[in-house]
Length: 328
Image (cartoon, rainbow, N blue to C red):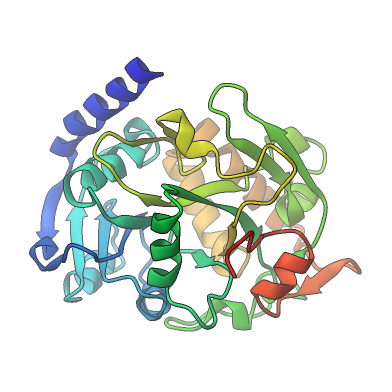
């Protein structure tokens, strides 16, 4: 595993050549600042609310890689004083689906910082997030000598067809996608990296009902006290060193955990699926997006009689989808 980690780090250092600076404001980063890392392509419609959400949560500086957007994403980000952005037109697939770029920027700018690594449709929640800022959580994790924090990706969806309501720039996506599956999840343990592997939810039952093993993974470790020796391996599903993946209690207790509310299942999904099918830059030759495109032709409704309307983090704790552990 040590050799594998070193190879991953060497790979990301080589991939730095893919990146060109659009706007570098990293000189403004202070010692205790919380950071956010994201790789984006044609996401300008989502970014105003995304930035607003994470600024309110307590993120101090944002690191973005723009993968050759043509919708004004890079220009919008470059105008933000708390954002640093790099551009690349290199292959997303050959950069390990963007992780090589993230690993390099994290290694260079995030050492010693707590950093969230998320996609622009993922919104981090944690126990007491309605009353305590992100700094309160990271200070507590520091006090407990915890270096990584796990979450479950919770797919949110509307009550009617995905394309029935049009998402507008700057809008809170959860005004449209308010519902989620409270069950229907499968959990196994990955013996190689020691991380949990979670599948299921609405995408599994609608898009992958005949092949549930191909459904997207829902386990993520987005919040890490970064060290230049660390590296993500597979999206934010797993890291090296291997101990960073131990974000759950093996002895019957419950470690504190959070969730990522996932705003993918709104009307923008169809256009995104068609674009990614053409680019073929995602995992398994964009097979996931092929399933989305084919499934959306049938105008599916994700809502069912077992759907739950999202209220707050306490609801997810009651349902067993996250835990406050011993953080009180």
